[in-house]
Image (cartoon, rainbow, N blue to C red; front, side, top):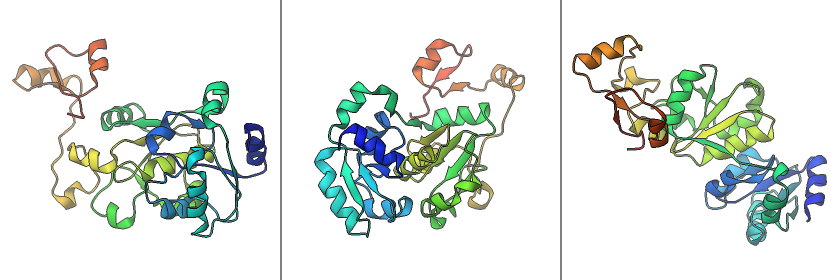
Length: 254
């Protein structure tokens, strides 16, 4: 299909499905597309977020269109009505129809939580995974229940979606964007990266984890004067723009 035909089918209710890998999808994709990468647990996740009664237009790599169609048909999704013939040209010629995905590092999210206390943290892992802990104040909405739970979430408030490692979260984030949520990001590295960095998680008391106490801007200088080490965990470019005297730079990823 050419672009005009794809857009017309979208207007009629067809779902635009992009089966490229998360990094490629995040870099730029047709606005409103849902991402389920072929290299992941494609059949399971597609079944979680797509409806077999909906027409589907493939808008990712044309070279994988046949494979995508066959694998969807194997799980009963046999309403693939076509594929976008030149998606790379759309990225070049129609930037107004293209969007990138917002993906945050654990350091960026830790900072954002302090700046935007109203952010919705959405955990799309399964119950067996969340039993060991979640991000504080996160709402647990497993991926298979997400589409049916959209009315529990606020489309106007910023949303951050995370999973175990960062694959399902981009699927979920693309679903939210498709549903009209205005400000959606997902977490690179997922819960695994957050917990491995020693950042606070809900359930610390039950699991025996020890977290640091919070101190304010008036208390911190006194602690530093008393011998405490001040560590700045932002990215180097943020450090170069300005940092506290005497601080040591150790980016969160390190």
